[in-house]
Length: 220
Figure: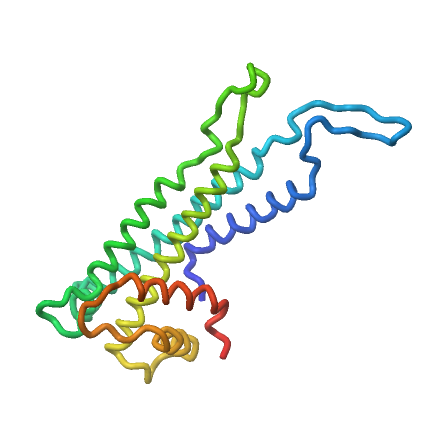
């Protein structure tokens, strides 16, 4: 099931898709040459302006930053023994091991970067071409920072995946729902249970790969 708060982001994704589809199928050139070869006219307006695309990218950046931020709050509860009922930082062997403490640091840092990347580019306008162009949408910048933000979100979700699997290992999988069990086993096929501290980056990268290659964990 989908958390209720994810619905708002999903709505923005659908809105952005409609905006982009409309623009891809619209006349986006300047000037426009209308009519027939025998009877034509030239219309010079702001038809190539990328405002709709830029605004769609900015809205999607905000929506996806929220997805990442919500995921980071969930994984915070997994490492916090005051609310998790599990060992602090999901440490299997306490003492010299930090467990998943650094994993949350990484997720929080990615969320902080996403808040910067989610600042609207479309509001940052300039005057160019000797006053001929006085309002630029900066849609290219909006799209490029969206791509970086989305990759950050993949990594935040991958970290939550790692921590959730570690937490489930403490409980065992006997009482897990079928989809949850499949998700756990698919990760454990490439990432071992965390017993002693090791380099975290390869595990995160593998978790990202599993997420990207598995569109639906509810299927066998």
